[in-house]
Length: 53
Image (cartoon, rainbow, N blue to C red):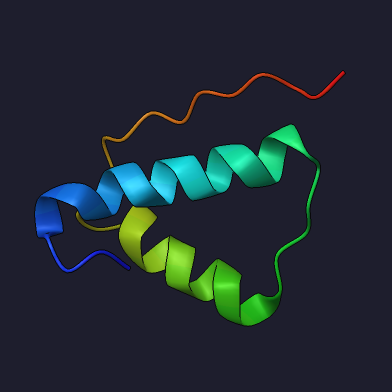
């Protein structure tokens, strides 16, 4: 996770968009970590992605 709070939501969004684009799975520990940010400081972050061809 980037040390700068301003960069953390962007990092999370890019991480999630990569997972979605390539249909990658996430384990329980990863999901819990993402939920902390999604329910907290990044709740207004929009994730955009293009599915892989």
